[in-house]
Image (cartoon, rainbow, N blue to C red; front, side):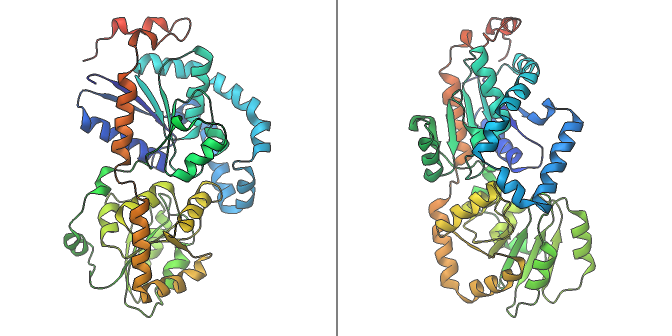
Length: 396
């Protein structure tokens, strides 16, 4: 195991894909201090202009035309039409990817997003690359862009997702149900009294945690205003992420209940420990963290596509409730606070679905894959790549 090198690939910093990659990286390093982990944002393969155009189009569709995004997402007809363009794009990035391999020389490649996984899989197939490739899903949404014969192992969050892979022709032995990797700190208990005191909260009253992802998406203004009229005593923690305008708005308001507005913070684990309920859109990492914390979730504003899949999964397992619109959040929360038995039932379902050791189990898998490879076979990727062979490896 000594001196192994791992290449982790994600898309865009401060996203669930990136957080999952960081969780795996920290776990690998904690298991063996001699390993080297290169975590790469695969969007660097494109120009800044292209990255800006893609991001702008994505967020514009989500905010203004979600029905269009829902049509495009995991649509077989759309997928067939763009396969040729996708192949051209992967070949365009081939030289950059080969240089990355020569620089990093990984024993295993693991991707927490479909795009870099597809780039690596196409390169691996064309060049006969022997490096194990692992695709790690961070949502309950195995869309068409994940599927590739050159991916050695898929890590999925549930048996239901595994069955979708099997139905589409992937051998069951290539699919491992290990969960979505989250920071190991979410598996550790925190000091609730100290956390409550730090944020001026009373543990004797219900605490409602409101999140809108890293960007503070959704009609959080309306949700907070509606919840502030609840007749029950309660306290609201509002995480605005990078949404500075929302944070400023919250700080300017006067509320009946105690409201704690926070920007981008690193204390989500502690805040979940003291919370009674989570109100959030169902991002894959967020719901996985809530599952591990046994924190009941009220789902709002799921993004069509991956988050809609996440919502359907939680609801089908009795592990969450959904407020179809911000106007319904108040009544949904009121019903839950008035029915502690229902909250208890939700927590019991959460316990059954949680994968608190996903990052550790995935790290074990990557070490296992790294240990069975023959170093002399790993870098036969065509002209010029052979110079990067293991005979010149000076790593520890």
